[in-house]
Length: 212
Image (cartoon, rainbow, N blue to C red; front, side, top):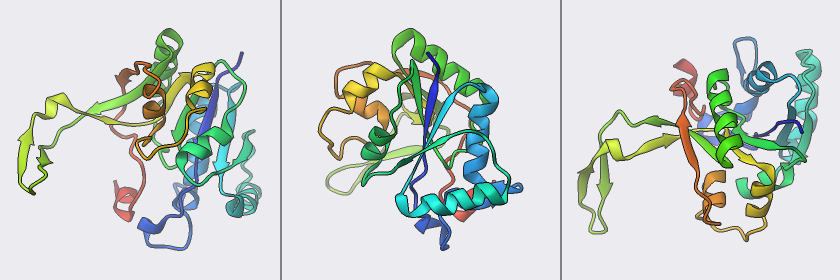
């Protein structure tokens, strides 16, 4: 059974300060979302690629694909109110499924491979990187204390799962505690395996990210 990736690209780009959603901003000659799709197609040319977009953005995306001659095969699913609903709408029939942010175009092939390998072995895997800056925890009374940064990791995507496991996880009722797909799976008592990510795999959120 083929691998699949759900690329969630429902952002409105408000923090970018412009009218064009950030996934459609042009970087290195084409929109960010096209770079992201290409990373997975390069890694596995047989992979099923599902792009989750708000219905209001789908026609614009099709026009961009024609304008840039973008012909990597993919299907479009309609986004939901929350990321939880968007991923649920994009779930396809496959053996392993990755969920990836549409505005993380710099994920390495090595990171993708590590995630799929670990998910195949253990059922669920997410890429992480070490915390290199000092972290302070805000106490209820407003004071703050330094916490050991070695105890923490920064979580990236793609987050990869056995499809049957992720489907069961998304049968749960949505709660605001579901901040990513790993948190949805963990709510069922499933352990998530951590693998090495790549530091360049940033989520483009603000104009400063485009200058990195």
